[in-house]
Image (cartoon, rainbow, N blue to C red; front, side, top):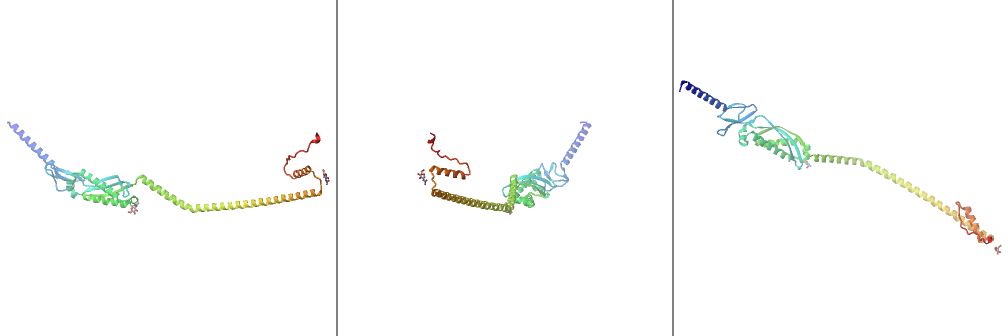
Length: 301
Ligand SMILES: *[C@@H]1O[C@H](CO)[C@@H](O)[C@H](O)[C@H]1NC(C)=O
Ligand SMILES: *[C@@H]1O[C@H](CO)[C@@H](O)[C@H](O)[C@H]1NC(C)=O
């Protein structure tokens, strides 16, 4: 071997060692950002660190990595339908913020592996708490006790998140919506109630009106009856008077015949009839048609 190639070999070795050192150092130095916390995980020995690390540069065994969680509050939003105490479907929009407790981060990672798995479990727990809260309130309470409902939801979520080592803040129940059929049923009930009230208010007036009308009708009926009675009386009197008149006339007539007969005037039958006819025609107010037999016509023969 020449001197030249020996030197080359040494130089190569030094460079290789340097590269190895740099690689080892860089693989055992990891950084956490200001909004992150994490626990070291030795990927070669499958060994999870015991303490929670915060923002900054951290050294560890070669090839380790951080299992990173946010150190700040993150939002969760829910828009779901739940059944209330009456079994009526309610639409809820709820948001809140959650954060893992740093002191329990190792336990959380042991249970839920990483932030993605943890967030999934928190979401399920939040949903379950919302459904549970929903079932404690009836429909009229959803209308009248919104603040109490929000407080109830906060308590239920806090209880569940306590077991999962998370804190919550800034909970808002932004929307509580009952089904549209329920809303319209409520509205028509309100309208019916108003209509009934209006009818009740109107009743005395309508009763008075009806009473007045009845009295008027009764008065009218009395008037008509009186008039009919009086007409009847008039007609009766008139008829009586006429009948009397006729009677008197017949009596007079009879008197006259008696006198005629007594006077010894010698009437033939024809003569008498012709006398009667003359009287009838003289008294008649209307034209009179008489079918008298014509006298015997033998004299024309
Ligand atoms: C709803 O619950 C409240 C309080 O428990 C109760 O007073 C009310 O009668 C309930 N309403 C209905 C419609 O059940
Ligand atoms: C009446 O007439 C008849 C016949 O026409 C006659 O027989 C009679 O005597 C008359 N009587 C008197 C009272 O004139």
